[in-house]
Length: 357
Ligand SMILES: *Cc1c(COP(=O)(O)O)cnc(C)c1O
Image 1 (cartoon, rainbow, N blue to C red):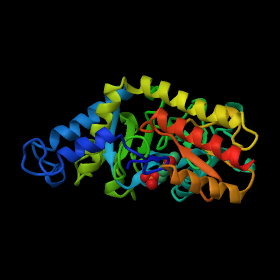
Image 2: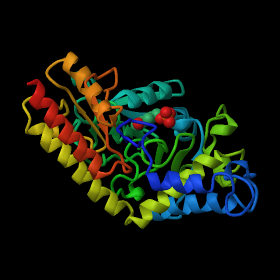
Image 3: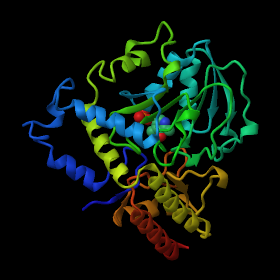
Image 4: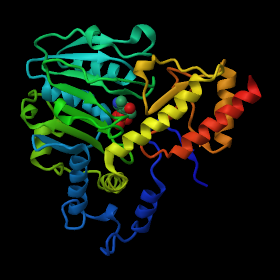
């Protein structure tokens, strides 16, 4: 039986995407072999690679001023790749609004003068600083922030304004809402939350920012190398790219990101409205900073949190345990989570509240 999987990542994929992959698992397009077994430099794989990249460009409205790269190493590798490639004068601004942005900031300090432009650590990352609270330096090579804080359930409700190029980790909210890519110098995202399975990382980078990498930058982390080779410098994660392509075909067929945004906002509102109307559950995040992808909440105590997670699992609502840094529960409701899954969660939480308050 399929369950509703509320995991933060890897996260659930649409059944029809999995079934399509299953149908062609042993013989892809009459090639007599699985797409997994095809050379990445052959006629069978090549259209998959290019369709995946064109779907990303089309869905996000990416202009020719940008390169779209399909890389490996997860979003975490970009914590190093970004400074190695973009810190041309050795200075950058960072906002720390959660665990991943903190890691990115720490990595950047190894390569140059990474400065803290803003932080929400004082209140356990339960809010996003406002534009006027950010302190930018005027000579930064870029400003890095994390659009959606997967662990803490917060999101930047605005695109920050500064003179340096914006670099944004969108791992947990890419393609969840319409975003004007032209406002960014670089966007990166691990695929396993909103795009496909684990194993491929999307990097969208403005062409004029490529090519100024540090002398020590490993070849495999150079954007220039991957751009020049159409992300085929070495063996790409072919199966993960294929799965992402299937998933993005579905996103397009459903109406693209405009439609995703509509559904995602409705799903999040359903859950937040329920939590706000309850005296039993609490959401710790400031209202203007709420994520629509990761919703964190607690019951009145840790024992009830445990019971809630257990009861939900038994009801086919899985992986609701919150991250150890936050505790409580976290419902990750990415693009592939249907509205029915969120409704089923709300119904369960209402019953659990009745039985335990
Ligand atoms: C999951 C996540 C990461 C880490 O991604 P990996 O692919 O596991 O390296 C980084 N940033 C954000 C915002 C994430 O949600």
